[in-house]
Image (cartoon, rainbow, N blue to C red; front, top):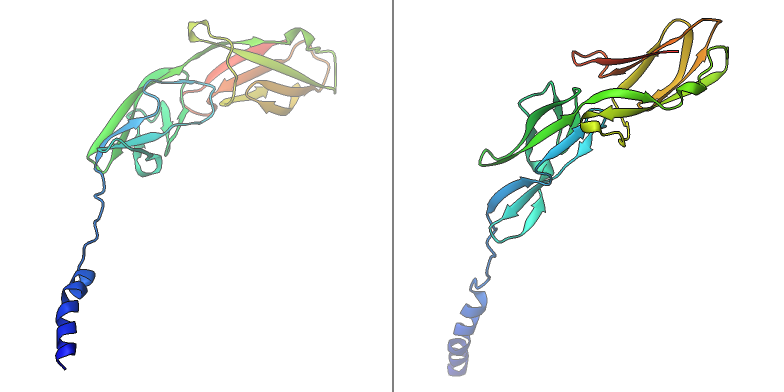
Length: 207
């Protein structure tokens, strides 16, 4: 009986130590800032939507992608479409601001410039034959933008239409395929930028 009491007295401190809460919880770092991965955004009016990231920086210096957790907006919704990490031009040129906000406590912004399409170059215009009835013909174009920029891929926002003498079979932002339906002295084609909006701009071509 005395031995049992002595053993209990001896083991009790160790039992108390092993049962104690001596674990350490690492503190979660606080956010110090949020930033956009492009601080001077530039889009062409013929760009398709483009993706951007919002970077969260913590007080311990680590970073993470916070794109989906942050609110994206612009004061000029007639000029620029803003989604979650997505921007798209809605007008042929202009300037606005992209703003990102997290939890109403952290925010940042970036200027956005949309480069305007000034004119079109009809690359193979001399190949179009208005006497060729019933056979598909393709017209390709290049864009001439502000500041004399020409080496730009036309990705989106251009829609083609023509007069009653032609039938359009295929089109994209940089080309149109059509068939001349009858004997005519000329045909008319129109490339519309931002079709059916208040920002529509038309580029006309007669052959």
